[in-house]
Structures are given as C-alpha cells and as structure tokens.
Length: 385
Image 1 (cartoon, rainbow, N blue to C red):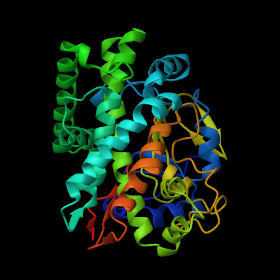
Image 2: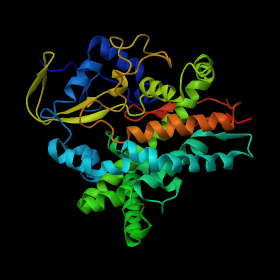
Image 3: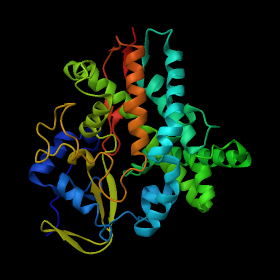
Image 4: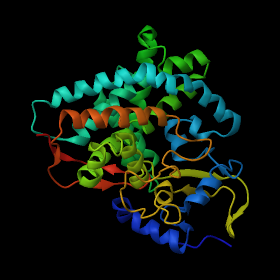
C-alpha cells in the first residue's frame, strides 16, 4: 500500500518540527508529506537499516537540489564511485591529521576569537563566536584561507538555504548561485598561488589524488555547506543547552561528564543535520509501504534521534545518557566524513576554551531556533561577565 498522507504547516515545522515528528512516529512512521513532495521515514531503526540499502535508497539524484546547485559531489554518489572520492579526501580529515595538524590550528584561532571578545561585556554567541571559530577551522581544512570567516559563513548559509529550498523560492536560489560563484572564484585564486596551499588541505589533497576539477569544486562546496553551519550551530546550541540546563553543566564542572558528551547529546537532542534526502531507485516495499521508483524519500535524523523506542525520555537533554544509537552523523556509507574534526573542534576546543575564558557567561535574551533539514539558533545574546 502507499504511504499515508500527512500534511504539515511548513513554517510551524521549521520553527519546531518535533511535535509533528512525534505524531508521525506514533501514527504514521512512514508517511507522504505533500508540502515536501517526499515520503518521510521517521523511526530510528527504519532509517538505520534503509540508509544502507543504496540499491534502493540512492544518493545519486541527478535532478536533486544539491546536484543542480552545487555540482555532483561525493554525497550524491553511491558504491565505488562514492568510496573512491571519500578515500581521496580522507588524508585531509583523518583522525591523525585532525590530531597532529588541525587541532593546534583550532586552538590558535579560537583563542584569537576569544581575545577579540575580552574587552566586551556581551555579544551574540552565534555571530561573534561560533561563526568565526567554525569558519576559521574550515578555511584551513579546505585550503580557502583567502576567504574571510564572514564570506565563508554567508556562502555556507546560501548553499544550505538553496539545497533545502523545496518550496522553490527564486530569491533563495539566487543567493545560493552567488555563494557557489564566490567559492569557485576563491578556489581559482588559491590555485593561482598553489604554493600557499597547506599540503593537508582538501584542495591540495584532492589535486594530488588526481580528482577531476569539477569534482574538486563540488566536494569543496559540500565541505563548506556541511562544515560551517553545522559546527557553528552546534557550538552555539550546545552552549545554550548547558546554560539552560544548570544540572547538566554542573556535571561537567564536577567532572562527571565531558564537553564532548555535551556536544554528542546536543547533536542527538537537536540534530543540526535533521534530514538526508534519497531517490528511490527501484520498486521497494518496507513495513507494507510501497515506494515508487524515482520518488523522493527523506531520512529524518532529527526524528530518529528522539525515537521513544530507542531513547528513554528523548525530549530531555541528558549528558550522561548513551548516545551510541544516535544517528546524528548518519548511519550508512555516507556517514559524515568530517565527524572527527567536528568532535575535536567542538568538544575539545570551542566549548572548554569558551567556558574557561568566560566562566560567568549567561544568556541575555531569548534564543530562537529555526529549521528542520538543518537546525540551529538564529541568534544568541549572552553576557560574558
């Protein structure tokens, strides 16, 4: 049988998707949402199993927004084609490279951002701290050190908005095209002075691997789209979660929990990456629901991470819970390649250094969250002293 239809209010879903997702998990765990023209999988175990069936749930989406707007990157390839490019990029983001090369750069840049805040009593933690900390890390990892943090952040936001633009807003698409052009121009500038590229940077690593230039461009855009907004939102969001849950922050201060646990639990609880799209490659039936070839399916990570069948009190932010079954970074062959870098940047650098420099940091106004495909705080006013 076909998936039952569930209607949603798109704006309300972006403001807070969790009530609707909870209803879907309970009543229609696999459902068709006409406002998104997609079939949503909302339960953790369904997603965990189906994401690995690449012969059915294909990442290859020739007409998908990501492919059309960014070029065909490794996230939109399956099997050996995906694996080859993933291996080619690995030297830039391997655990060893992150530990031996990038972590010290993360610490240096983060301390520099903190220095810029030293004379201030307040700031917006999203734009004044999380944004530049995330952007500096990504500038060095990609090799695009000729881009400013603000340029990289706006480019990432333009791409993120573009590939989530399922309503077809022309202004959003135009901003996305401007963002991808800026990235292409920046890549060209760095290639003109290739000696300035660190040998561990993505551009240099992919050039040395012989990856075609159109693929390099597409994969750098992929790294920017996923490597800026999500760490930025996770840094600010985790701080917000700790400041609004004093008991959990006390666990860290009492050394009963770690900063990394705070990040892992936030990533489960709020899911900065809330969804991953797939193309149905052939006729398929799952739990008595028929999937039609060439239709679109959304793997709802944000719902899976709050699945009541997997997590006890999933709506609660709890640092000492096990997050081993969370799929915040994906579950199959497309598991986030930058997961190690994110964990080090956020759990070992951005969070501990911020609280060490400003131990009395406190919220100074309302914090609004937005998004369901990608979710994070829009702004975050804080008092630093």
